[in-house]
Length: 305
Image 1 (cartoon, one colour):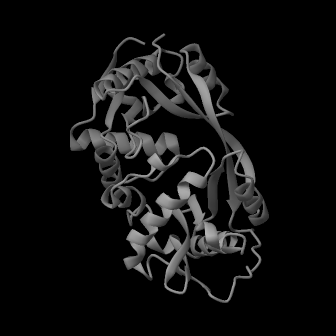
Image 2 (cartoon, rainbow, N blue to C red):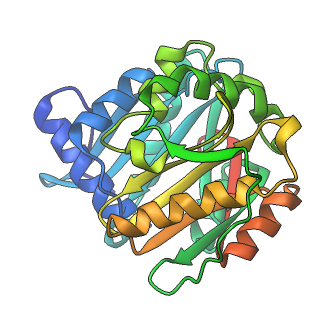
């Protein structure tokens, strides 16, 4: 497509343009402050594609803290539907590859929905290969019927809003338990609490009342984390229970309490992902009433067309 200009996002006005098109095309509600925070945390470089003064696409490329060992940079790029098939995506893709190389990366890692067949084919033509699949699930909170959990008498549920001093304990619990989750590695959690909390405990996108904690006496033994996406949706990102406390219904109780808290704040939907090999969580989400809605495919590559 002739007349396309690729612009590196630098000014406040360009950041506002990025936020606007990102929220439109991703059905999100990210603020400029959160976008700025993520750009710093990921050492991210963002670009816009303009045609005749109109923003027609965006691209993001960087690295999540804790994933510095991964050879590919994490990337996301989307073109407005009416401008696809005109070479805009190829121009943005080439620019992201250039920035990835400047960050010391050999290619890009992207996520795409299985239902988006044209995008999957587009990536395959450029040498991308599939590395992982996750089941995408959705629960309608307006009609969900959640049964009361039966917890051991010595287990108490609370939230990070009620006990904010538990933040460092929560970080330690996540680092301890994440190696048990199929498809993840311990290096995916930053070593420094400050890096992790900037990403995972941002109060604007991750309200502390949605971070549910399970206590056994004075010890933190479990947690469920989530982020808000706009006014009607919550994304459940992580559930964990310390190894010695599993098998007592704590994970179910944590997720149920989080869903109740989300519903109380006006959320209509809860969404999450499941790794195919994570049978316990697949069973738990089915018990809660989550329904499959798509499959998220991770692909790596980066050959120019």
